[in-house]
Image (cartoon, rainbow, N blue to C red; front, top):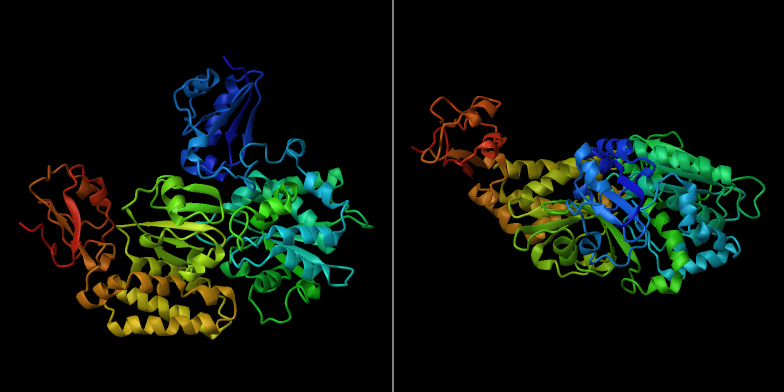
Length: 578
């Protein structure tokens, strides 16, 4: 029998939310001399809590571990029960670069990071000239992973060219997209890797000050970064070659404003001002934080730097596609079996991500929303598209930071667009009229359509105002905000027309256009529906009063015989259709 060397419990946010603390405590009680440590997320969030048992041969993984003494005993005995085969689920993920150490090392242990080639890329760079480091990044073809896809080496060269004794480099860790959690996971799991990328960036560009702008809703990420920065300073990594004083590294907690993901709004927030974008030029590399030359990259971009330089720029450039090299981390969410993180080579198809990695069943998926709330919806018949910056743009979507939401067949695409516009119009900073007023009007129009009060003129209005907002908005938030409406109109116009012409929601998802109908023949009168109804819409004879019903679906979900169904409005009004 294999000998156990160490037990690792996934204790990132996803693991803790699933009950990892109890698992950790139980293992700690009975493990004796065997070390039990907390690690980050390996990406398979749907299987948390996950335990990895390091042995003198192959590691053994356990998924959905219960925090009980009995389960802990089974793990220590290396039981076959509950084992989790990581390689099988990562069959499309052979080339793992950025997430290689995530969930495999103790996040804040600098010695373990160093034992796994940590800071080796920094050591290589500091014997090179700064210009040579930037040239390597240009050869790699690495593009910014924050959404715009601007070449990283080129952006760094702009900052390096500025002859100023003080320069600033900012890590955008705001991650405001609903459903996106790539950056959070990297900061929680491998904070030293993110910081090593920033140290290399500071050396290559001559930056003297580093900001990490992290949303305050990420307490674990902030805690791990704080510990890592202290250890970096203790080890002297902040004293870059040729510098007279150490690099200044500061964490700034953001208040969660989506617009602060835009670089000039983020800079304003860092200066203590209201987070609003400004006109460019001047660009941040000319005049950024407090007028100093400033460059911004997101967390995933910085997490790429060390792996790219260790692997070799030319080798890295061979991965992916010629214009979108390397790998990309996606946060999979929505109507699929395996939500979590997936790092894949650029150029794989959406079908591979959604079906083979995400585990969604073909035929059950209507579309995918890529690029967050300002992204676009791509229909299932287009899933053969290669995932790269240019191909997605051709379909009316964007890569974004990597959020990928799978939309099932029972979802309404008009409601999906309304949902995303409800977010973006509220998050508008209000500075420019196109975004402040335009997104509000788009949202109101979509709301009207989902309530059954829309007209054909409303559809024409959406198609007219959307491109105008794109052209006139000041920043990326406003420029991309119309995407959900325009992309769903492009591919799912029939659903819009059904809402406005027939006053029907084909998916039976828009509550204002549906009734609830109870089939009395199968009803066993158990009373669950009556007890769970929050508004008393079901009487003692088990008749649903649709005038009272708020369509919350509580009765439908609890009914043991599935006798309650959503039907088009009018078919179940005020009765059970006896």
